Length: 412
Image (cartoon, rainbow, N blue to C red):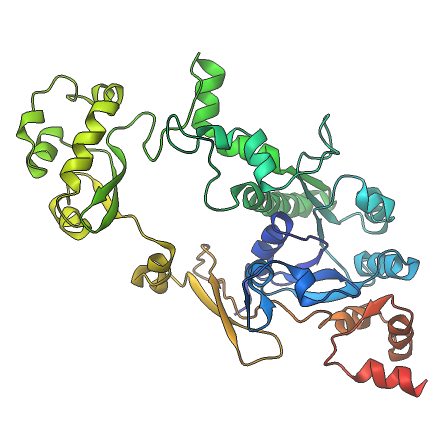
């Protein structure tokens, strides 16, 4: 069944993680995404390892469901191909996504002003470290840079310890997610105005947006938020605790007296330090070692059963454990996708978006390099002879398994 964005056509110039994550969301939702790769790219250029079945799992995981087109954008013919793809009478591209530094696409003749003149309905989405305005706009940025500058690392880790980066690239992926949101908003507005617009998303801005409560506290009080481990600044107990066979997480207590009885610490019932949630938060440093000692006596499963109805409690899973979790399987959150030109398959994270009438279905993995170059060129009316000439002059390259162009070049 077609996805909710069926019929939407995207030309994707993104690379690394932030941009591809955003265009992946659009592809997951059913958009036809043509990913532009450079002529001469090989699998080792695509991304980091580990390499499984000869492909970069880093690249595969965020470029699933996209079509691969190769272009040498330094050549005028390649720039013209892009404009023809954007043209409503040609490729009819609805959305362009890119995550180069501000000004890079304009220097190629492919900036927003250049392409909106070709197609006024074009949604042009730019993901960058610091955005297309402001004093930092031309600075380079990667995930750890925006996490550091955005304050995220200042509140991550344990009190008294060094700054810590969260265990996944929230700096990159937040930028990609907000880009997808911006594209969807601009598409909705286009239905009323008939016009496209420039979507400008900065990875740094996305980090500030996600700081929510920390920003509110810092901007409106004298508090300077800092690292607090796994706990919550306003609710106690709310954290990870060691158990006999691992770790578990608990979130709040409905009834403190019942909680004390369940954990076998009746001596805490009348302790004035812990009577209310504000009391417990104020005296967290005294409460935590008590809870650590208590919870280490029993297994995670035993504590889950004991605390049911008293507080929200769950195991702290490792990544292999969550990959194997039956609930995750039931929700379709681990997808097995084919490797291009192969019978092999690679497992990746699924889409968290579940729709009742137009379900999200992940079917294809990352395309082979240049696998859809011919398809894109045929879309804009390039003849077999013209395609052969473009290949011969290095303007484009074709998937090495597509022998048609090579035969035509040899024949000519």
